[in-house]
Image (cartoon, rainbow, N blue to C red; front, top):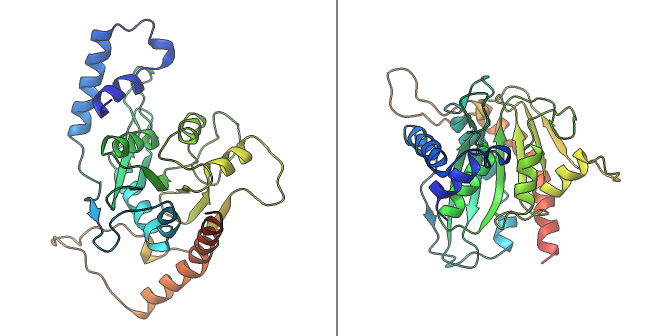
Length: 276
């Protein structure tokens, strides 16, 4: 099933499938695809490795680096800028997807929420769109799922969140999706400023929203001061490129990021590699 056919199903709520005939459904799909075709490109190119001819499951763990997480967050925020919401509740997602067990390839694919009106006939979720794109490109494993948006009460659990977690529907989809490992794929959610970032897995998110008792907090939260690392990569007025600096301030910010997020990710990688 290609992306267009899958969008036909995703754009129609279950309650509306009985009353929307196939011609109307195809019309909705065509309008949705036309809208997506006008959006600016935020996906990365496909990268191949000549050193490693194929990826294995361990590469999911090895791809959990501070730089990859930050890049996924930036891509998710860039995608959010073109999200469509009738109530201005915009969400961007980015998935770092690998080709596991085949030719070594990886790509960061983005998604947006698309709900132009109150009707549920067209209601695309950012995380699910990014997953559909990864599946459509025959990638086989998601190592990072980044979600950026303003937070709100979780509609399924009613919990207050520090960042915007994937909704209950998206959690269920990801938990059963062949690209997502419920105990290995890193779920990263952040406010648009990146000042607050949370990290977990799908199973840990489920534990939080289902009020399951645990000795450890299922979600790890980071609070940061304003950092240049978090500023959007946009050229200065009148320029076409972004200047990359390497000042002492830049290095201090990198050390702060690595000493917090980097340490957390190292523990994650060691746990996953021990499970092989």
